[in-house]
Image (cartoon, rainbow, N blue to C red):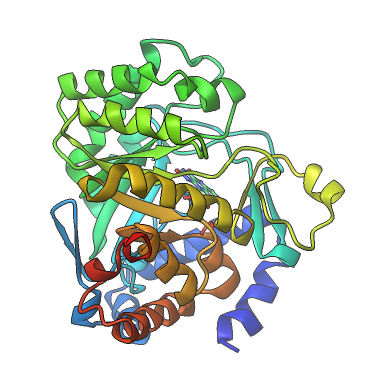
Length: 367
Ligand SMILES: Cc1cc2nc3c(=O)[nH]c(=O)nc-3n(C[C@H](O)[C@H](O)[C@H](O)COP(=O)(O)O)c2cc1C
């Protein structure tokens, strides 16, 4: 077993989950300032293989694996995170103004299922502070910046304020990003979460951003739905805005029946407010991914996160149509070695299936 799982995780798991998260980010921030630490991390973890190289929305990436939004909400740790072997790192969600998030406790572990329950409510320092931080340190890999509406009861989710909120953070941050993701379903207050259920609002948001000027590939991180009609409508809306490069899928809010909970008692789970990340969402996300790929095909790039903690899980998402695969919860349970394990495993699987590159495997399950 790796050092992380035997020595580090038991210590971190003794702490309150949010405190453990803060400590990890702070330690990563400090380590990231040292060129020596970055070099050591890269040497220990990175897998440099030409078969893993891939193009995504015009970006040349070393591999298709990335860190999902939510770990480094404030862009503090990009120095180290960019040296762990990921092909890209997505920070945020970031809002135009600082957001305090929801009351604590707002982060929980469900170790029996290898999952996390999260109701952070997108606490973050706001676009200006994060822009200044990114001017001081940039990752050595592609950087995605995930944007969300400010979570502040004084700024309710109403038109056109919501669009202006996204436009303000886009204007402040897009020049610091290689791509921008719009978090359209943040599970914080119900009003914010459900705002874009009225799909024409997505169209109006994109129109407002287009008018303000979009200079980076833009991704829409959608509220998960298995309704193909809704997905078709969203893709049709995106078709009207050529700067949209693709889609991602967020966590479902609450505890829907589609979650695959194997061992955590349901009453325990019900007592934890928030959305579940990790293996319990893998089947749901994969199902939506396959549907979305069937609709969007190769016209759009899909970025998929949800329960990836192994090479098999990451490869499956590529086969179902994802161009990029991300993880968060798997890193919490398995530590940074999981990155190396997944990348090596992807090379083996590409070779086994006769794909010269990652692109050959993308969507292969649908052919
Ligand atoms: C603690 C935590 C915080 C998250 N915060 C955000 C966020 O701020 N913005 C966002 O778009 N997604 C956020 N996510 C969702 C992740 O980016 C990812 O889509 C999801 O967790 C599925 O991947 P996983 O199963 O590998 O964790 C968060 C997830 C977790 C577990």
